[in-house]
Image (cartoon, rainbow, N blue to C red; front, side, top):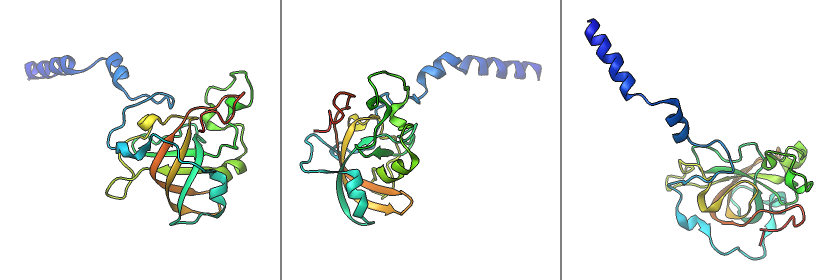
Length: 193
């Protein structure tokens, strides 16, 4: 019996992995890193920006569930704007100022969370974007990195409003997404065209 127990313990020790290897292979929680999502069709992402697009806040004023919409926004509005295991992320209206647009000084480590923006403005100017699979459910992978998506980048979303309410909820099922660049303090609309 002792021999069997010793063999099992030894085998477990040899087959186990050390903490360093585990940490290196673990997915990153840093929302600025690019991960290689799978399962999101490449045709979801546009190479040319749609013309004559209104900002999210303008679309959100009158759009209702079932409406087809196209709008300009930026990825962000939460500390973690991307869901980890589903193709869902948060987008904010370009009129909302993330921290890096408030000063030339780099004083904020997570400017994509819009922590300096009021809760009311965030309710008025954010949307949840979902990328659905053939089964009508969000694709089972993070959208982070797909098509160049990352926090603070401008995006144009074309899709259908699937849900909304007067409390700020605005969910859009994206058919197509154009990914632009990031603005700067000096050029707050840089990357939007």
